[in-house]
Image 1 (cartoon, rainbow, N blue to C red):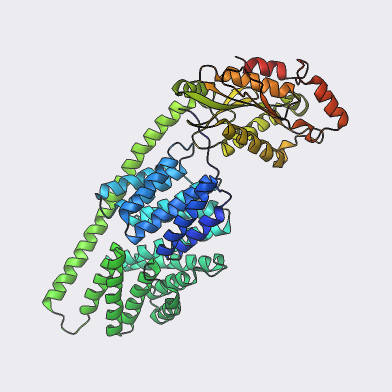
Image 2 (image 1 turned 30 degrees about the vertical axis):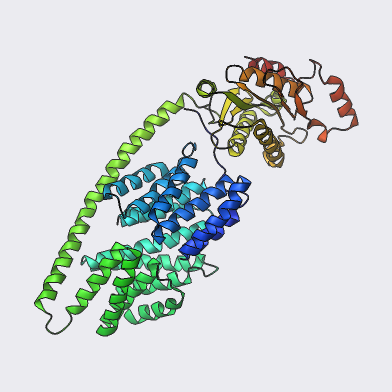
Length: 565
């Protein structure tokens, strides 16, 4: 197993995915789906992989909630194929959980549990360092909520809230936390656990105020009013709660959870105030709207409210009393099954954790301990599996011996780690980045890659390196790289790469040399970089040394010998 290049978290057209996802979040699924399709044309044409993924993710979710399940699954499966070889598991985690949303309407419930369990293992414990892990944790919490594993969903959301660094991310987490707590409280009311429901609503009030503080643009103002109003109704303040619900109604969409939440809260409030007819109208509307959106908890909530209201008449019919009793028993039975569902998810998580641990153990022998990229074994195995010609890039750190001698090996190790991360960040999907020697890295591109792709990668790495503060290791020393690029059979590609990178270093360093012919019989293509900063005297020295065996840095002899092996 090799170590593959990670896709950057955000692409140049990331704003497009932000627009589409905000449309999805505020409830306009149809508009979000249309926007995603339009913007995908742009991101695909531009080769913007991160933005393409976010747009596919938003499109899959929008299509699911619009009821186009087959089309949604096609998009989700295509997204899964794009991230199948990612070194980080977070996109795969999101795909697994989002797939559970799509299949829950048709597949066996155990399939949904399987997808959520896998998503949980792939997500891990969020630490805030990687946005995609935070995003995966929020999606995972939604998957747990769909299984009515409310305590587990709250736990993962609180853990995510503690490590989320950006305010917009914290806002998204709190939005999901508020919805989770409200649905949890509603279910507790339906099974007769009123005291527990009130305890949850105390927490909900706290979160609604945090939501109001974070929502500086007021995008989630209706949700904030609804969850706070719902909490006050459950806590015995129906007038205060009903006032907030009515203020929120103009901004509510019927396909959002908060709309259902508002109807339930209004029905409860009117019932407490003795307005039975008004309560019945709200309960009827709740049952009808929830049925259209296929939200089981709120469908049951509407039926529960209607039966509870019918029992308030002076002499309720015996059939109504019986129906209410049967519904209560059915709901308690479902709530009791929750423990088995939780244990099922945990059991599947243990299975997936063991599989992941075995996979990690197999990968340890193929990973460079310092930089975390592949080692020579990973490179050898990748080349052994290659079919046809291979396109690859060899990178050598210029004057690296000076870094170790003048700035210490600690600084040298830090430079190696930074260069490795830069290569992983910029290499295309399905590429393998491996440390070949002390200060040398090889990047093997995926099948079908062209030489131009490797040349563009070298240019991107050089440009990014110049923008990084850590590249200037000392006032009089700036880290640069030499690149050798070649195409050819896997059996000879390392030799071709070695000759190319040696040529780059002998030509003045900080440039790339591409072996222009698979047989090595034509002159190399060079792109000079060194004289960007050189003065006239430096350029004359460089030109005089070009082609001479003396034109190597202090550590080049050792590096070149390794490169030729």
